[in-house]
Length: 195
Image 1 (cartoon, helix red, strand yellow):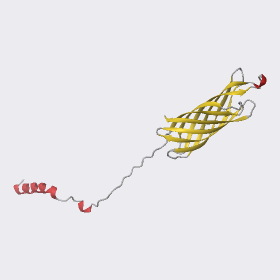
Image 2: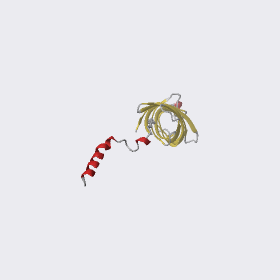
Image 3: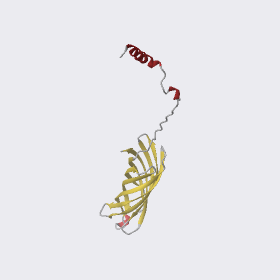
Image 4: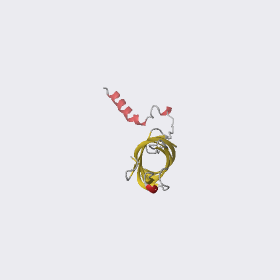
């Protein structure tokens, strides 16, 4: 390579950083504003342990203490399904005993249901429908049976960090051996956790 060309090439390399970029004249400063919105969703799955009372229509006039375990999972933003297990211990009049004596009875329920829930951030009211089985097991060789049951839960879930507080009233219609659908009411409060 002849010397004048070499000097010319070296000068161009030295001056290249001082030249404006080719597209600088065509550039326009654009400000882009990026916003990130965090969607704080309610847990898609929830396990709740609830305690309360059962007003069993065929029991004596006292409320029976009860406990329930309820597992929920989200199907859509406002639809959830639920698997519920409940247990109550109450005194039940026994017509087969003299003087209308009572015996303690184990009242067990299991149901699968679906609920419509308002998709709010912290407080979520809901209403639903559930179907399942109801069992009554009396002590002292009393009645023992398992029959179909329907339930209509209505309540509210309140978010508290990663947990939720749940207050609920549930109207149950439990079938008995004589064919009568006996209405009962559950009133529970529980604490739920994600799982």
